Amino acid sequence: MIHLPRGTQDILPGDSEKWQYVEDVFTTICHQFNYKEIRTPIFEHTELFQRGVGDTTDIVQKEMYTFNDRSDRSLTLRPEGTASVVRSYVQNKLYGVNTQPQKLFYNGPMFRYERPQQGRMRQFVQFGIEALGSADPSIDAEVIGLAMHLYQSLGLKSLRLVINSLGDQESREAHRQALVNHFKPHEEELCSDCQQRLEKNPLRVLDCKKDKDHPAMQDAPKILSYLTDEASEYFNQLKKYLDAMGIDYVVDSNLVRGLDYYNHTAFEIMSDADGFGSISTLSGGGRYNGLVEELGGPNTPGIGFALSVERLLMALEVEGVELPVNEGLDCYVISMNDEANLKAVELVHELRKHNIQVDKDYLGKKMKAQFKTADREKATLVLIIGDEELQQNVVQVKNMTDGIQETVDHKDLVSYIKDRI
View 1 (cartoon, rainbow, N blue to C red):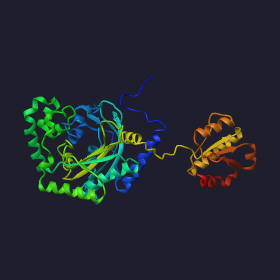
View 2 (view 1 turned 180 degrees about the horizontal axis):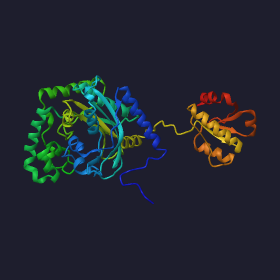
View 3 (view 1 turned 90 degrees about the horizontal axis):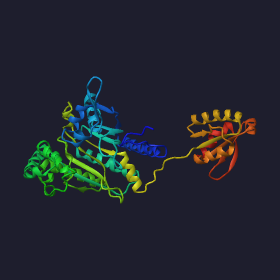
View 4 (view 1 turned 180 degrees about the vertical axis):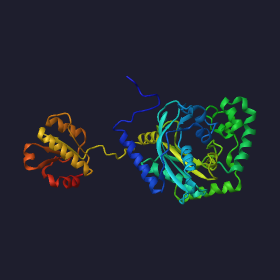
């Protein structure tokens, strides 16, 4: 027997309906916020992620699924969605269309080679949005508001929004130098990854999982102490917008996004629910002015966020939220003999054309066994066809909720069913 690869999963009936439900909610909310769907390839040229995610990140250094195709081109299964969206934005010249900013959303599988654990897989599904073309802090608030609205619409309550500012370029440079000066005396005590990061991107040192308890981490320089007046005003405006929207938040100066082009707004949404686990982050995002230029486009500001569907479903389960998924059939058709089965085939096909969810027996079961199947399928109505019904051109309809059974003429059947479902 061949098993599925480690870090992947089969989503079976019973669970797939939950996935469909949250996907529908996400799509509906994105449309309400006027975000349009974009679909990009599952694999891209490796260079895209080296430039778009960053050479110093764990994603690029350790977690990408990279391979050479038959023409010896290096390709990578996408580990995240932003780089692909920005590549498409540049390649298709979306910066030139009349509607700006371009507000886009995506939904699809991503791939990272990391240790599988609950809520974190090697193939996982991300929802994400990107808003490209505006440097207004009000759109930062909109992006955060969309993420919070999604979680709250699905019924989550134990949420904590954490925000920070990474400042503008001048702020980042001053903070970068302060970090180098702070960590340099401790360089030999840091892990090999952090020693490299200290030279290339010292902000990534603050995000290290191995050295997180090192004493030097506790008193490392905070970016908020190095904000320029303009960057500080931007952050204050964001907080005013969030206040106006009634969105609670906590400012955490330790929250970083380690890529060079990230600036100003950074945020994460956490679950504080009991039993969720030590890794509490549900989603994260931030402003990435400079990424479009890095990938060959014009100077274009952008902001976005992404969330893991697996972790979303995990949070719903921990909080005991039951999604209102429809697990039952509208109708189940029971036929008493071969002639009735012919009529059942015709009837099932006709009802489906009227958007009625209906099924029938395909195993030649006896009437009692067909009723058991209808019960297992949670059918609201059971339609019974026998010799007498065939002669009179009617159907016996039994309501499985109250047990009432009525005779219904074929010509009235569609309206009768729709009235009762």
